Image (cartoon, rainbow, N blue to C red; front, side):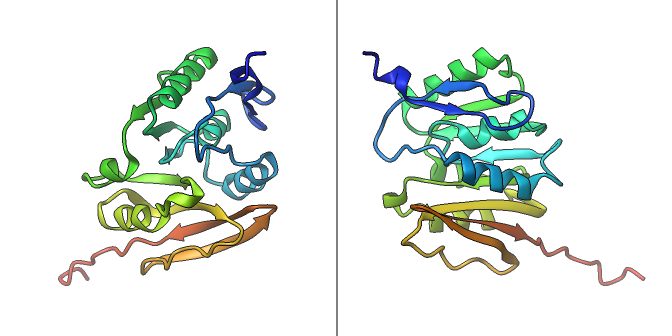
Length: 198
């Protein structure tokens, strides 16, 4: 039996609804469950069309592919493991969306340490045991990665708390489903006002 073929995710909405995509098995990789994704993208429905999205710990690519299926303008997927990154690229080619989806094999924290170009939506669902949420949030907040009013999705184990959020980040949604705790943050970026403006 081909064990790799048994590892599949299903796109649940949009242009590619019902399509199944294979993903590689590796430690810590677990696609966001269907019902969690359904809830998340209901939350994002008002802004997802045309949005610039970052899936920072892509893994199976479940969130990034779902975003593109539902009309996002651009999706960047970051994935450190080479086998998983290769499978993401193969899946993008299968769907014919290689031009709209940029897959980067890299360490997400190193990539986020650079100067950012703002995203409208960022997905953060790193391996639960890796303690990566807090440093990822810190780099997003400080390096110019977020547009005003950006949404940041957080996912961790149901037994865990979310990290302390930076000033201007507001947790608007917070739910638990089985072993998953997930939430949606709205980020208000301070705008500097010219003191000489009327």
